[in-house]
Image (cartoon, rainbow over all chains, first blue to last red; front, side, top):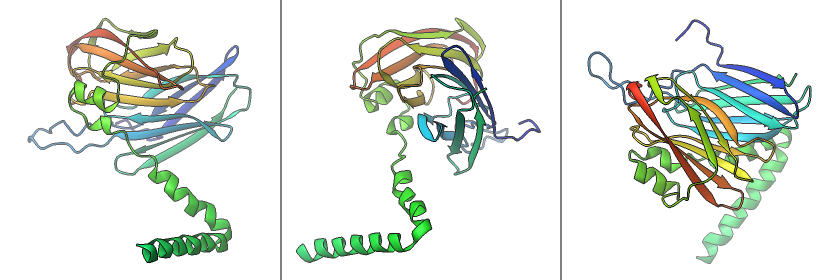
Length: 106
Length: 158
């Protein structure tokens, strides 16, 4: 993993009639199926859940498996998003770690 | 039987009274049962496509207006970008599978009406395989579509 450990990076840009939300989660997404050089299984460590709320209301709920690539990236389009609409994003992983971040559409 | 049920009711009443007496803390406690409801789909435990589709109740889903934009040949199975778009009205659930991955189910999304039924992400593919999307409408109708992708070097341990 890189030095930068900011767990969530967000970009929320307005387009015509919708808002484009791009999210990057810094996470190894270790599947639990890989083995290290000594043949020991590397324990699973991956995001299992993500939530996106706009102005306090959840609009996206996602369940993830380890088949999502390391450092998961997602892009969504939100109908009718307006300038300054609050976007709150969070994830949690199979070890109970959590991260949250927010931004506003601009 | 009856005494047990009534004692349960009493317990519930006391719990409710206790929650009220906690004042500002009560919402925190009330949030607990909601978290328990965030149960993970059992289909993520499936190790075979057929089991995953059965767990998702999608074994007989007909082909629907779903678009999977991705590479025809992925050099690196560890990072395969794709965009999925549903043209099916009132799509509320989108699920993504890779037929030949050791864990076939990758993603399950629930969307409200203001989210366009479309997403971009990057996935792992262990080997050449079909990518499979399931879309479910608010009324519960389920549709599917697949697209084959050749993988040169598999994404390790996906």
